[in-house]
Image 1: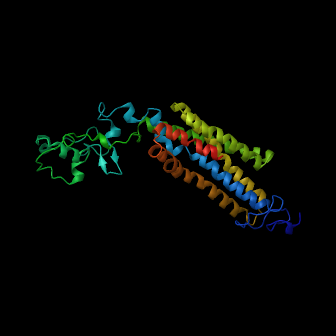
Image 2: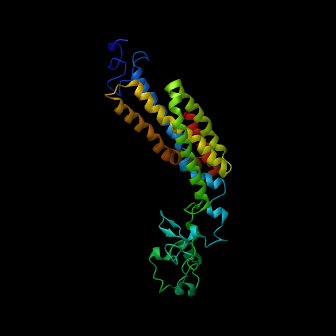
Image 3: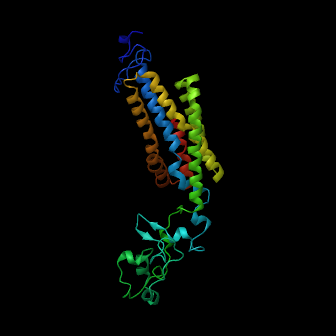
Length: 314
């Protein structure tokens, strides 16, 4: 087809020598280049949205699997667990060890309640409720002159600052999340190494379409996770969707000439990668939290229903 019959300027091989992002009108015969660019970019964005969808929900998943530190080792029974002794609630700036740890790097116990507080008489119910769960030092109370102390102030431990799922470094919960993450990356490396051959044989449209159909199935399957082993397995299967990056680059190379293909690759890949970052916000702030707060779902049901949304987007 002569150059003038294309919406974009093309070279002798029919590849576009320009990339006008706004020029999206025209049939597939008249404007194959920009149609392909936007389909490439949007499909890559959706692929990465699904690939990263489960990652920010890791704590919700492990809570459902009952592997959180405070589920395996209730603070009331195991108050000296290292994960608790080291814990600091960043939002409230409160410590589990109300009066500090006996060692900042390798604590084995919380510091004792100051003698003046330990010997002080119990305050009334109103004072107790006002000081509930607070760190004395954070309130600026002078521990050398305390007229009365609440039951909380007399406890060296402050379990009220712990979240629903303690999943810090060194816990079984963190290990479950890390193993699942490794599985997800491993499958991506493997799949990207073989997708080049598939693209050369079947073309980017067929491969990308097949990849999105596959992705919709495995991403939706994440809502059925019931044990650490199938959490890792699902992350492994979802990781294959990361091969969409190879399709993105291959597709751009077919449609754009060498004077502009680098820019086309960069823009399509950059906007596509945005799907991964968008998932970090979208899955938690736009789905899970509203499902819990507005629709009254349990944490367990909310994250499972949320995983159906990116699957449906495919």
